[in-house]
Length: 312
Image 1 (spheres, rainbow, N blue to C red):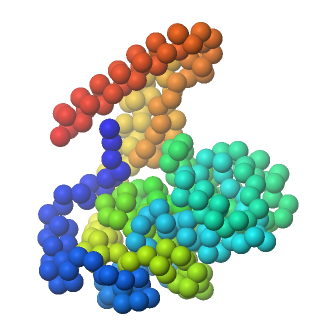
Image 2 (cartoon, rainbow, N blue to C red; image 1 turned 45 degrees about the vertical axis):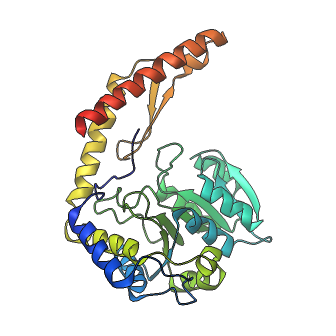
Image 3 (tube, one colour; image 1 turned 90 degrees about the vertical axis):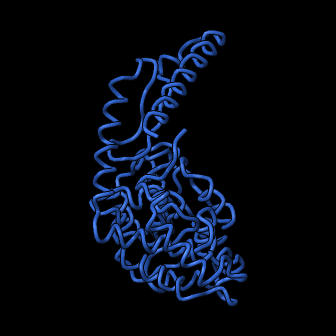
């Protein structure tokens, strides 16, 4: 019913023409991992462009968004490490934690007081810049304070916050040890990247399994992201327009909802969740619950269909 084409890059003729020209020069696939004949000048240009855009020392590009964060976690965390992770993180982060075989402590979603009680001996924290499963935003200032207080390292996945939050869409502060994000949302491409200090990024070139063993990204997909980042650097009107529409839509939907429904998220977020209220869950009879569920789901789908058609 909706897409994550937040910045309206899909279908942009300028981007499409440059992608076609890139295919004419480099063909479609690279036929090898980055370390085995799979690296072109376009891949290197994309990595330097991302590092500049994110105000970071270095970046590394992966072929798929899902494997970016999962490979990054597994490359740093091993059996002897301890991970404190938000219980609401998305599946790629969960798979990275599972692959690491580290000791994991799950704290209640976005509950930093619970996290603080667990932080007696910590090596890493796993968070998201904008939670896909809840559409809310963590308190980064408090998280950074906890990092320095308990000598922790922080990995944050920005797959939904990059290009959407902040004045220019550049993401979160440099106090984060490793930032990861997918190109498959705001950047309307395929793949992902990690940014951080040089020694952190270079370690992944030998230890990131998806980087070492997956064929590198087609060059035209890299070219798309380069052009989009340059557009954002030259004019952040797309970001400010998105944030204005997000606030407007959040206020409208919150005021229009039936009392049996609740909207969860932040007015600064381009995504939000509509859930059944506590009153609905207190309905004891299963038959009543099913009737209400069918009624509200069908009505919401109908309205969203109408909105999509009128906007199209």
